[in-house]
Structure formats: structure tokens, C-alpha cells
Image (cartoon, rainbow over all chains, first blue to last red; front, side, top):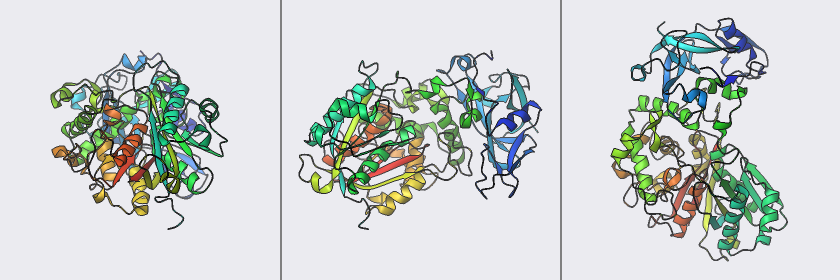
Length: 145
Length: 385
């Protein structure tokens, strides 16, 4: 089922620490070491103070569904086999302007097409889980805090 | 204000190939055909052309175009990025080059084949992604329609927009296409019942919320206003031009900022209207970039035709429909029902409205707003008679 899914490059210059974090079961956010502003996706320079210094800080892994779609064919083959499936955007508890795209699962090790799409609501509370696909641990979401 | 481009250039030639699927000619060949037609339409010779502006995504390069069409010595060339956001930008750059004397006769164009390499980037994705795509693609947010559907669902949630509003958009543009013999959907009417019964692509968006997939090419010729007055065609003067990359913007997946529903059109509109003698209330016909139906309410808000959150309701009561709507929009059918050539057909239809030759001509329109991609770094033109 996981063959030919699109995966992140774990060597990515800016994002490698994020993926190292998910492999340890941590949801990390890049945070300016000078002004403290969190930024997501990660990048070299802080847009608030232009500092190049940053740290990776853990988040609670709690959030709410900001929006979602249900994807139907035509899709890339590996995804078409799963369709229809949901994709959610989650606003994170610490700062609702920080958002992550993922999938809503019925259970931590479940597939992305298990939830009945008609039950998904904007504003639902969700918490992160990490699913291993090849050597990557993808942050996905289950219901409830 | 002497050093602005206002009314100092005009589009004096337009050209387009047939629109279709599976056309045999290459993108370069299609580009050369459209450019050749535009030069003829302007009553100029290929050797008069000394400026070229194109989309960064264009496959045929400037040197190839110049060698094929037999252009003269090119003294200005440039390109504009971000796919569907580039269209009006190429023409604005051409106008600036003419006004500043870097060239005298500039051509801008777009040629596209859906089956060509590079034409559907989402379907040619690499297995391991760096950069911005790693935050969305692994989760199955693969296609442009998926990316815009995410914004559309949020927009519907915040502002009470419905599928009926999106159907208003699709049906209006289809009606215009049904009047345009060159449109891909010329002989294919669309009903609200058909819209509501259509298959999903990315809920909440269905098949008819999507643009077409089209092979074809279009081109324009830009010269100074003085020269335009000596040429055969009624000039479509470039009254105002703007581009924008709004702060903290991300291409297509604009979810990583404070206000994702404030699209690139807002910043573009501020400069555009600031340069213009017209206001949105003066505009009686528009060509708004319509890769997907929800971009229309976002653009109506961004360009100031209504307040934030009112774009969906604006489409009620046939507001987008020729001839009686408040703002007949995409009067040749647009990307959703005429052809999807990265919005360049919207520019050509804007020119036809200023010439009085549209198949859904808005009588007495003094100006026409033309916009490029909402959701990406964008651009817009205000044309005037």
C-alpha cells in the first residue's frame, strides 16, 4: 500500500531536524533563538528579526482542524488506490497561525481512508501520531485531546 | 505622474491558435503560429519585433521563437514566473520595456500542451521532496485542485458560501462559452443539475469547478500609444498594471500565514487602482483568472468589487453573466469553458472587449480588468479603449 507514496527528503537543509524529531516521536517547530518567533515551514532566516539563530522546540501535538478535503481520482497511482481519502490542515494549539497538513486517522496505525468523510468537521480537536512509511515518520492526526 | 506607464502603451495585435486536446504541433510551433498571427493582426512585420517577454514555464525559448518567426534584433527579453500568475505580468513587463525605450515592438505569449513534459507538474513529482512540497504532497495533497479545495472549504466555512455560489461561476462562464465558436465548450451547455450531479475531484470541488485542459497558444503585440494610433486595430491601451507577492505568501498552499483567505489579489489591487483613473465601480466587464471556481469570489473581494466574505454572494442573480449582470466576467468562457492556457486567453478577450469584437460584447465598457492567477504570485492589467 505504501509503495510509491511521495515522501520528504530527510536530507533537506532546512527541514532535516523536523524529520529527525518525528522519528523520535516529537513534533518540533523551528523557533528564533533571538526573538522567539516560531516559524513553519522552517527556513534559514527569521522574518521578524532576521536572525539566523534558531532552535527546535517541542509542541504539544494538539490542534484543531482548520480545513480539509476529500481527494478523488485522478491521482498518482499510490494515492488513487486509497481514494477517496481525507487531507486535513491542522491549526496548532500553541499558535493557530501555525498549521500543518496531514491526514485524519481512525486509529494511530490506520490508513488515511478509514474515517467516514461526512463526519469530519472544521474545529474538531485532534492530536498528532507518527506513522512510519519506509524510513520516514509522517505526522498524522487522530481525534481528541 | 509622468514616469508611470499609464496609457503610454497599447496592445495592437492578438493571435491565437485553435484550442483542442492532443494537437499534433509542438508547443514551440504553436507559440510561433500565435505570435505570427498577432504580428499580422497588428499590421507589423516580424522584423519590427525587438522585444520578447514570456512565462518562465514556457518550453519554447526566445531564441527559438525569434529564429522561427524571423524576428529582428531583440534588444529586450525577460520572463515572469509562477505559472498562471505570470500572464498579465508578461504584458506589463513588455509595456515597461516599450515605455523606457528598451524595445519598440514587444511580443508576449503563452503556449501549452497538456501532454507536454512540464505541463502537469503534479503528475511528474519526484519520490523524495525537499522544499515546500514536503509539507503537503506526502499526505496526498497532490494537485492544484487539492490545494485550492483546502482554501475553498475554509472560505465556505467562514463566510457561508455554498456549492450554489460556485455553480453560479461555472454556469456563467459556460453560457459565455456557448456564444463563442472558438471555445472548447461552445456546443456543450451546462445546467445546475448537471453541476450538482458531477463527480467529485477534491471535495468540496467537483469536475465543473475545474478549468479545462487545453492545447493551444496565444500572443499579443505591445507598442507605444503614439505608434498604436497609426496602426490598423483599435488600440487596447494599457491603463494600469500591477504584480504582487503578498507578505509571507506560499505558492498555491497559502496556509502558512496569518490570513490565508487574503489572497495575492489584495496587494496587486492596491497598486493597480492607485495608478488608475477608474475605480472598481467603473468596471463593467472583467476577465478574472479561473483555474478553479472558488478563485472568483476571492478575486472579486481582492480587486474591490465587494467586501471580504461577500464574493460568493456577489455571484447571485446572474451578476457575472452577459449581458445584464452587474459584472459580466470571462465573456469568452474563461479557463473553465473557453480554454485553459494559463489565463492568456483572458487577456486576448479583454482586448476584444476594448475593440468591440467579443461574442459577448459589453456595450459601452470603457475599461476591462484582466487578472492572472489567484493563489500564486500574481499580476493584473486594466485595459481601456
